[in-house]
Image (tube, rainbow, N blue to C red; front, side):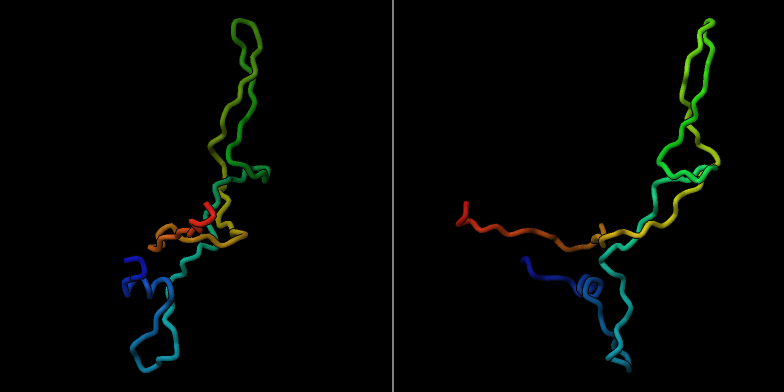
Length: 106
């Protein structure tokens, strides 16, 4: 039960070879590893990088000054593609990962 993979999963994970005239040339298949991701931070007008930006403002309520923070949502540029330091496994990888333990040690 545990060691069987379908041919489509096997070809996706381990790569496959075409049934054409060139048997020594592998077919390009997607990798199970993720090497980059879309960044979740933004650049503002000054070039600062952060998840959120706030602007300090002063309100006058009943004659008293009160400092407030207002979130900036406009004129922000997305960070773009971020290369990961260590490759990660793709979330759609159809293989169960498990760790075996030695029952004699328990």
